[in-house]
Length: 239
Length: 126
Image 1 (tube, chains in turn purple, orange):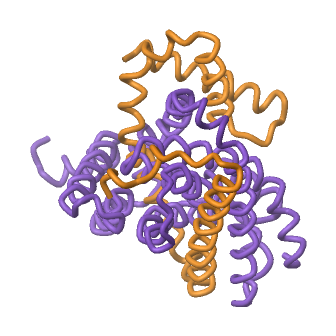
Image 2 (cartoon, helix red, strand yellow; image 1 turned 180 degrees about the vertical axis):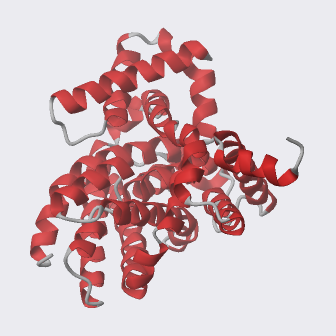
């Protein structure tokens, strides 16, 4: 089998190629991110996704084939979430002291995320299942999908909206909080964890260990609160 | 490395089982996170044991979102159908939520005198 076309068709259907491509795209994205001086607009997730999307389009590969290989990387999301226990444990005394500020940040961030998303979408005439899919978009993906399903939304649309929210939040957080003159790493991390889940948390860890720890807590707490807020807010906006 | 992975996967597994068995609104990995914190509180030496691999995982947290992120491309038609409205809702609410969360945190930290001088970003790299 030394015909290049045959080798390609063998590889393109297998897992090795797309697993390797995912790691390579991430390394390239991370390299570009560093080259750009770790600026938030050069988000490594976004860069890697764009490279892989272009590659899939150029080679005519569908997402299901790609995911066959990439699923091994996707699987690591679960263990990485569990791993957030260590920074949380390291910061436990500080977390305990910051209980009230965190509660305030959680209620404000979570409430505003759900209500403002529904209000803006409603103003653009969006309703029904799409509105329900949008409601939990700041929550970590597995929870958001569960909430959207319970509200009559479309799980796949929710997954895409969750990821777009995460990437956008990770890009916008640094200039936004600089403009607001928020200097407390705990507040900076916590708010992006609440509004932009794990991708926001990944951004927080790139910048500061304290921000990362508080971001992970924000993400976890918002998963609980959105499950309560989203159905109420959706009823308010007549989804 | 394998030992730490086994520990982490063990906590995720227990979290997954608890989530389903008790029909909790939290996914397995988040419950696993909470259980691992509890285990670390009860047995502090565990922290040093799992630190190297755990920090390695967290240093590349971004990587694990890439496969799902590529999935956005598979839903471009759905997104395009409601393009402007969804983009405005997503961008607007994310900006407002980050700002509201950070401001509420900072104000309450100030009122309750829980400000931490060492948590300010003056010597941070950003």
